[in-house]
Image (tube, helix red, strand yellow):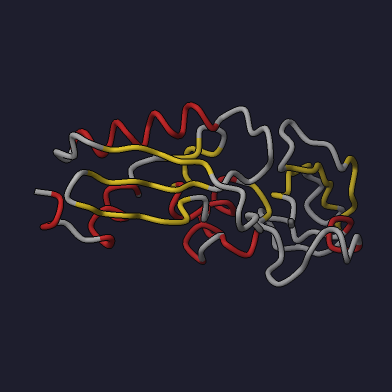
Length: 163
């Protein structure tokens, strides 16, 4: 039964699973679904969390299993792996657009917080696209967000941190 499905089909199904903290962003577009293994005995999904200790991991694993079961996959498991660390470069183009439409500044591509702290200090406003912004706090409501203020449109906003 499981041999007749494809990885692409499973990934399409998993588009239904949204990040619990950012409900417009699928786990696929976030880049945390890092492998789909289809075998006659079942399907294994590998996930890499955005941060170690992510409090939403259990909910995301449960949601993935629920979607697989809904599509007739009776034997499925979700494994969490840290073998290859997640980076914000794994966020798809569609995911970056979803973040922006949600009011979160997407992280810049190809940058790393630990080698370029300037990336965190300067963000593009998701509302007006202004770059005249300032970092108000590197600590947002979750580990993956920082708080900024746009001096052009005079709105506070959050940025998804580059990692």
